[in-house]
Image (cartoon, rainbow, N blue to C red; front, side):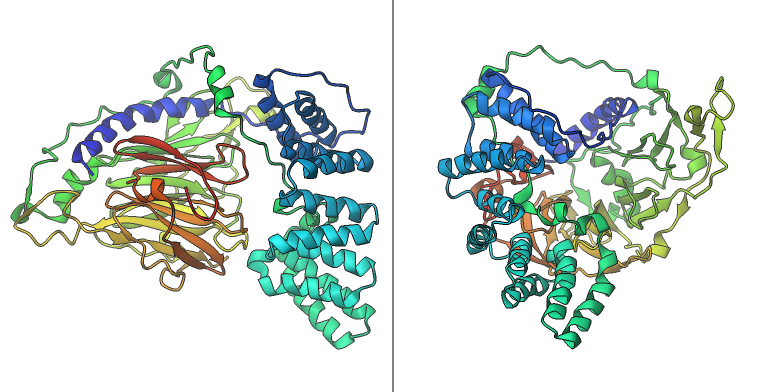
Length: 592
């Protein structure tokens, strides 16, 4: 990777940090409302192409909030446009089914199947509809078609088991539930727990009491691992085929609507109280070779670490409902800005005690111990540190001019120091290791955030040459994978998880369920080779996917983000490389 990229990124990112932060000062969220009272569906008229995608996306949002009548109205506008696909008719049918308009739902799903008879989600939702109508033979046939295509879908097996049970086919019902139990909790989740109880019920009906008690005992040990709401019928009739898919807008239609009003931005960082000292110039020319006699870890701290770009982390560290900002500056100290709740921020770095010794590359906020508090996880030279704001309630004071007992006018002062809980979590320092990012995600679907730490190199191990350059002559490092123990600590599982082979000058990682199998997979990116894509097989096991398509295999990635860009239900990638940025669409089977 060209060294000029580091210098450019360092200067550019520092100027962008505060611009990005200004948006957070005014960030607001709205919670979904209560479930709607059923009322007649409104008549709709046709709409121009520009509106169709909006109707799809808004309908999807309403459906996910449980606002089914409003979702129906949006999906009907799509159908009335004359541009509806099979997925659009299915979306309307699913919303109608949830609104208990089963005849109309059947009509839309039948239309969807006529347009695309190979869309698996159609058969799944027809199976659920037939099940609700007590048309058990039809439900059985539809769900069997799903399983014929996707034999590892726990929702299809579970609902087939309930249909068998209703038909008094108890042996077949047990077999369906057994398929889910064999998948394990990691893949089956709420379906696994529910299958244990339904197994108990079926065995009792069959007067197999000893086996029934064993199943019940298993259920008693597992049922608290999932929320009760996930064991109710609406959740158990869902799964991956019970979600709305919004088809993407064709590129030609997108091009027609690029003539929108130009968007401009205004710099207001100082107005918000977000100011940093001027960045100092680099102490030496990055392209100049380093003599081995001049090199030391302190030399690397002063001259090599500052080549990385600044970054920000956002999180409500004091649980006052306002997002705070932590600014990472590799060449100097870090800064914590407390959100005052009035559109301004205060620098509380000194009193919070999280300025750090320098040489930090990134940070993130995360509630890894399910305490309801956001811990600050900082990655850089010598490893990762974890800080947590103390759980104190007497640090709340009224804003100037607020009325007595006006809770909404109160704010936290942010004057309490953080506690360094790194040792308590089981993480140990790694002298000289330059960690680039700490990524927290639930690898095994147990409700606890596990930890991946990407490492760039070990600065205590310079190249064995008389002179060398950074980073080209430095070897990469191995990442670290830690499993969350559930008691506020982690245990390293890098080797047993199959991730010991993940080496390189890692810049970071992103996670997503790229193949829709129910687990978060990992994409690791590095500047000394193409990205590494690992499939999560559950139970803390990862497997490297070697055939990922030319677009990904020939790209050196410096940063990446995940999103479903074309609304096809598959996570795509936006990647930044030395040559610019790319959007890589997920083509299934690990190809981008």
